[in-house]
Amino acid sequence: MVGIGQDITDRIAQEQEYTRLIDTANAPIFGVDSNGCVNIWNRKAADITQYTPSDVMGENLVGKFITKDYKEAVGSVLGKALQGVETANFEFPLITKSGRRVEILLNATPKFDQQGKIVGVVGIGQDITERIAQEQ
Image (tube, rainbow, N blue to C red; front, side, top):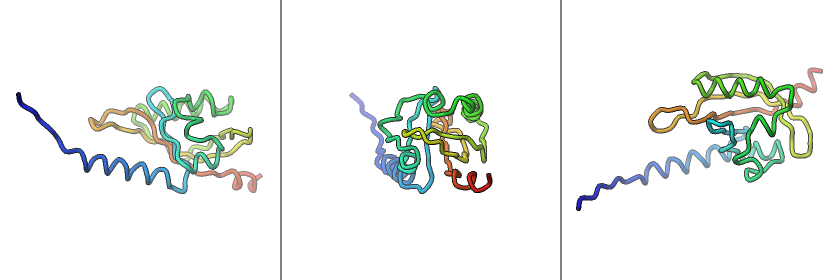
């Protein structure tokens, strides 16, 4: 019998640090898998939308949380990211748990696995609701 092992302690530590950084960032950060289902939802995203991670995990982002008039545009941004095309400074509304509209400025980028295959999208946003209100 022959056994082969690999120490993945460092990789696990890196993944935990990555998760901590995302969760504590002062910007809403979300991720979706290749089917558009939420798999990352940090504290700031929860604060802004009033949806907890357990409320959104596994839910289709566009289908459940995007206003009807923006579903196609947001779906297109996510689709492009899944093809390797980043999008910067895309504005769209999210609807909070209480029904309030929040304006988000989004940068969407592909998420890659260890083999370099695109497996989802990571979105980093900024709540620009107050700025939009002041401009109007």
